[in-house]
Amino acid sequence: MPKMSFREALNQAMSEEMQRDPNVFLMGEEVGYYNGAYKVSQGMLARFGEKRVIDTPIAECGFVGIGVGAAMVGLRPIVELMTWNFSLVAIDQIISGAAKIHQMSAGQFKVPMVIRGAGGAAHQLGAQHSNSLEAMYTNVPGLKVVMPSTPADAKGLLKTSIRDDDPVIFIEAELLYGETGEVPDGEYLIPLGKGDIKRPGKDCTIVAYSKMVGLSLQAAKELEKEGIEVEVVDPRTLRPLDEDLIFESVRKTNRLVIVQEATPHSSFGGEIAYRVQKHCFDDLDAPIERVASEDVPVPYALNLEAIVLPDVARVVAAVKRTLE
Image (cartoon, rainbow, N blue to C red; front, side, top):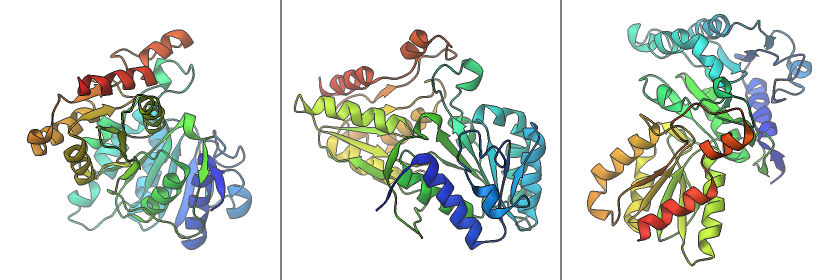
């Protein structure tokens, strides 16, 4: 399989789906002439033209709303947000519109759209550009939420999301755009709601998603030096959630550490913990541990940002606590 970056895999997924289906189009800030804020749409304007790769004003409420309307009449828009922090400007269009129209119209309208862009913290973006908002969107019936961790997963999940008849929230970690990996050519689809074991192990399960998967794999390598074999489970989609894969792993290892970039209060990690304790209570040999960002806005200063965000040492320590 060819190797490519995360951004190239996303580009390939969109380009293949636009080639396959004339109803698919891309719109957002700087997606055209600038080739995307993170160069995800590199070359797509030249290939597909201005009617299908559409530069928008800096007005998320407006162009997300246009995407909802376009989806209702049979098109399949991909709406790129420069960052998921800016989705808050369009929150009414997403939650009151996209998520609810199918039910409120008694099935007369579908909203087959993907809203995608960078999410979470990167390097020194400051508090207003470092939010991890996935729990807010998983709380909304009618939305599907996808958070890939590898280039192959990014391609397979995005192609599936574009073909889905429901609105999909597709959150891409900014620091993953340059990561490379093998990506299958051509028709490659990953079902929504199907997780993946990124590393097998027998002593403790780590459930992580997005760029926390890579962090967890680094921690697993450190723990391996001490003879501790950690299983890393990547749900890939948070809604729908492959809870059976998580339960199967916990029943094997009897321990669970949840690693998330979001702050701990009311987070998606709490939902995973609830489901595991409900369905695997008798299988657990230790309390569930969770590694998350500190419960503060992410600072701009690099040294303070490093203290707030999860790191390998905190994951290693959490796994060891479950083995005490």
